[in-house]
Image (cartoon, rainbow, N blue to C red):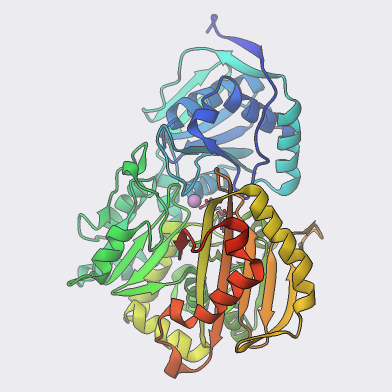
Length: 546
Ligand code: VG1
Ligand code: CO
């Protein structure tokens, strides 16, 4: 120990983007620059109050630079006075598991190393996010403090010592700080067992029910293998691509119809299993599929809310539901039917956290393949899969039948998102400005069969603390309840990404089996024209349609 000393390293000021909806994301090569990660981590520590002697949780999704980053963080946590770090074995832990571990062990907070669904590898992306003591993403006052501090920082504190052993379960110490290497899956699996009827699901698998779960070579693999195959008895091999790889096997770990195409082929093929699911880089997202059937994330939230009574841990009823603004309004109808509150929040999980902490909601979700509940303070991919499995074990119907019955009762919200990725940043901002200026005049105007009811730039007042968040995206609402929403992504690392969200409500069950893009075709044309997408961005078509 005697050769361990704290050095305060001078460094150039941090040059980085303002951390977005989900922490700071940059190319790996940016994070590898001398002092870059260190500056950002020091800015986080400087922005926090009163952690001396307390516990920090650290883990990542296993992407390239994960291990190096964990070692740097351990040495910096020791130099800055944390009492203990709980680190997942191998430096691994999924985002929902970090949230679970923070809460269970009453840690001060946690650092998650991930760029979520963005590709990894030496030329891919890396990211850092800080979660607070409630297990949820840092609230805005903290992210602003981190950013402000990062811009002026000129030194960081780090312990000069050998790397810690992060591959053996157990306790060691660096400096005066305890390093406890924990099984990244154990606490999370235990929590799942309290929420879902494992006996009923086990019985369903024993009866021949089949699942295909695509972990996309990312961090969900170890969790899904332990829970689905070992504890619930799904056939060995049910988990595909279950070993986390630093480059996710060269793929894009984003669970949607475009990137999870292997799974989609299996589910649309002959002899498809009963249920298919995938999750993203850090395992907080999910995609739900039935046999030859895609459940949109917006519908998934609505179906989950309507069927919570079938699920062990939620059978007592739900307090309320929240959805992000661009998510379809399908969940609103369910909330109204149940007589519970429904909230529309800005994109990103941090806004749900306050509502969950206040007990105002139990379930929440986003159109971007994310659903979650009050069990942690992050969206949770495998939890969503187990929620669905519990519904299926109870209702003993197919995914498609359950969703079709749901539409029959509540109506169907046809829904799609069109992304224009890596467009010129100035053009993207110009397009949003144009919409901000032109849409107020559109009220009452008719376009083909659609009449505009109202337009706004979404602003949110947090009902728990009164905080106001403005400029969250343009909403165009039509008189029949259909909507077009435009916003710019906060998680991209190249240029800007324009997201156009399209939603059309269809109450008539005779019209519930139409093709989505065709059904939305007229709105898609209106959306392109109103925003002058082609002339402003040079793009005649979106990069990704989900
Ligand atoms: C995207 C999604 C948003 C999600 C965020 C983080 O943000 O649209 O719904 O909360 O990613 O998800 P944006 O700003 O690019 O639209 V994750 O799984 O990347 O932590
Ligand atoms: Co994610």
